[in-house]
Length: 238
Image (cartoon, rainbow, N blue to C red):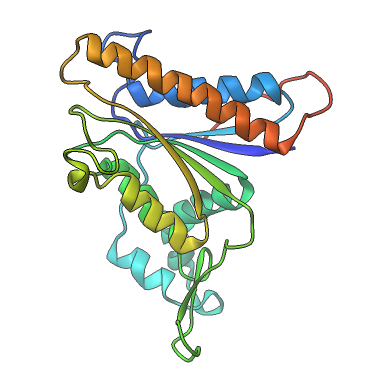
């Protein structure tokens, strides 16, 4: 059984096309999951909504605790890291991350950045040894076979590689860097553009993104192979 972590980071509730002012990224993540489960209904989907329930930002206590050896941590340190431990455990349990991450002022939402800060953890997702020959840091999830899908949305257009304002896009590049740092190297990305225009160009962008989502979900699910049975595992909201 394959486990998917379905994470939404939009501050908007609901999905575009279904609710007024709904989120484009929620629309794409839900579509990806639906397409996936049509082919692999026995797989497990775990759901985390950091857009509406953001993780606590990293604090001085968090840093002190994270960089203290586990065997030396006091009770307050374990409490300070409890939420981070839960988020890391979800990453470790997942085979595929389906991340809905809209662009806010050229970068990821603050809620999603807090999630990144909580899951990039020394001793849990990346290693560090100052005495290690060569590179003192290493990704601890390198050989776990995990993959990520980033589904985004943008108000303007032309943020893709080689396009007019690609240099202003710090969404996919920053996510790619953070995930690669812990060992998740395979990342696929699809985005809706023209949101601030709201005209036929937005409609065309949505249609194109949905077609890409359908193709990507189908291709990735097929690569894993067919699952026996037809009973759908329930999603688990976290």
